[in-house]
Length: 219
Figure 1 (cartoon, one colour):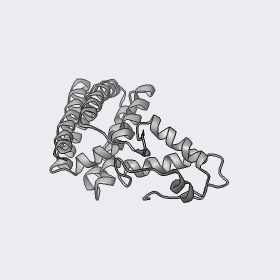
Figure 2 (figure 1 turned 180 degrees about the horizontal axis):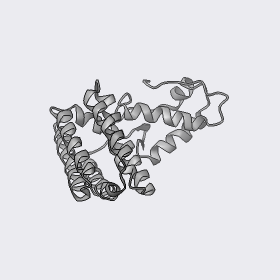
Figure 3 (figure 1 turned 90 degrees about the vertical axis):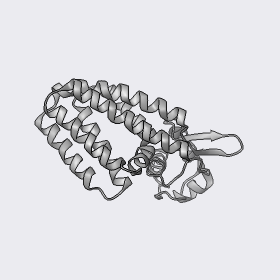
Figure 4 (figure 1 turned 60 degrees about the vertical axis):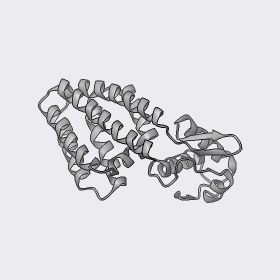
């Protein structure tokens, strides 16, 4: 199984450690949609019993990253085109509102940090790094809103679909298009134009949705 194992036999937070390791492997695409998550195998990897493994799988199921299937047990949860469409529409709605609220509160430090993330995104070596810098770029702008509950929902939603965002960035022109759109969003933020930042963010997410749905339908 392609996850990073840790000896947690004497660790009190075994379930949390297993949960984070599995989550990372799922988000990075090392564990594929529908792949079985066998409790015995995971327990051996982490030198622990099956009890914290079951707890970790329950946590991941609550996050939408794992599903329990009849006769198969726990598997990596996939995403249907219909679900993808709903999630990206939701993201466009919530993230548009959050960046609109954030723009009036953005400081020079916020804009500088976003610019640093944007530059790192443009020069990143591959999908794993693209996904990391893409997320950091958006979150640093949203964080200025101070809307902590909205931010927690956005973070959880991104966890659910992070591997699909990385896949979408890997599509033809995905990276170049995202870079251009990121620069436009940042320019609107720097100009203090909250309405433009909201519109551009929504267009950015809905454009990514269209590309992703096309890819999912081809598969």
